[in-house]
Image (cartoon, rainbow, N blue to C red; front, side, top):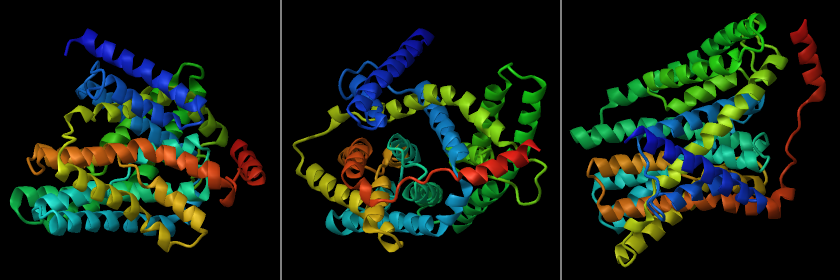
Length: 420
């Protein structure tokens, strides 16, 4: 594409994302819904003004990577660790339930091939971290207990999804599963999550010193964005999703994360807040591009609305996509209201589901009807899940524990220690 056309596309994306996002907020709806609708409005589904291309896709990827960095820097690691067991149970249940349900319905009910059934099940395992955390953030529940459990589960879901994707890709190419390839991915992802926070914490000390030497020069935003992109590249190198690199970098710079082997590279609370403040405008610029690009990826005009197979397949797969995500949440301890909130938060498929579906379509594994039905299921879970979550919190939010505030006393002690 010509440069001036790309610039026009970006202009339309930013303007419509802001307008529809503000309209959504005006009606007390999560702004992510307005941004997703902006993509459908200006994309091939309606006006057709903008088509997703490699440039928009790249800018959107940068947006979700920076969003996960912001999520990481706001995360209290102690809460995340405390919710580790529950997050694991939610992730495993929310992974196996959709995968097995999708496979058996496709294979036994619709008599599809093993490979197609496996890919459909794999597509349903996805959970969109970006949409989930953005929705919980809009609702002010990101730091709540259910928010931390959901965040941990969504991260684990993404890791398991990458491993499954590698296994299914080998199966589609070779007709068999390469256990060595799958084990290699698992090993590399594990190594990345061990090394990334340590390296990011060490690098943050250099950024801290750079800011003290050259204050007011804009060194922090430049250095932080460079750090986040480097860790996104590093995550890809190790076989993990790029956005998890942004999350690891943010986690290392968070207010409550300290390395266990010493305090020498501990950045101050004031510095963490400064990083968060200066990086926020950049995150708010790029993040809407990602959510609009999800809407742009959907072409509702290609749907054959008269096909009986399309309707039966869509309805059954949609039921599985929604209710099997509650599987893991039902096995953890806690009030039923919290379990429902966690299950609902795990439903959006978003970009992760589209990656699975797109791979199946590009490899000629899916027919047009199967692919279109999957895209419709992804569209429903992506667009309407935030709305249902908002409605649920407005009706039953009082049954959940209040969003835990900061421990003021421990923060004061921590701040005095940092200043010393």
